[in-house]
Length: 170
Image (cartoon, rainbow, N blue to C red; front, side):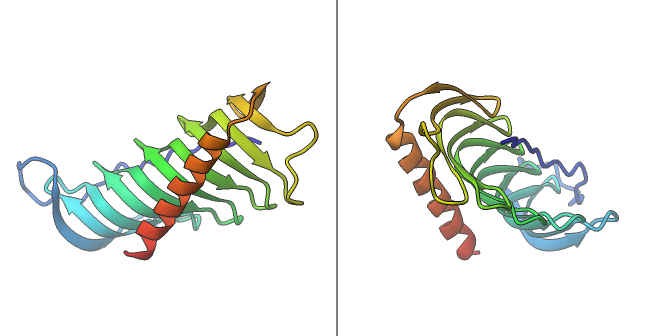
């Protein structure tokens, strides 16, 4: 399972202000490349706060942004049906979360820099975890060491639920 993604949109809308970056405005903007954003902006014209982002390829992000990047809790849905719910940092999947592939296979656990990296559990589309069970420490999307990690999996599930709930309130 290969998972890595960083969403960076290097364009901003200029509000002509030199104040500190904090949520200053709410609005919508459509970029020349077809990217659409509806949400909060800081005084520097960067996406900052809660927002809804749709990329030209159909990828959607709903959640928290900081200085133009996905940061905090969010949900990212891909055109092929894959989805990530969880924590983001500086545009990357980073922290706890759940990633579903388009075929239904999922990983619940820890992510670093857009990759499966840390403790977690793989569940195949038939609902099994494989034999022997694919649970343990993953590094760069590969199982390194088998280890029970139910607390990490439960944390990932809780964070995914919180990200989903936050997006439903938008």
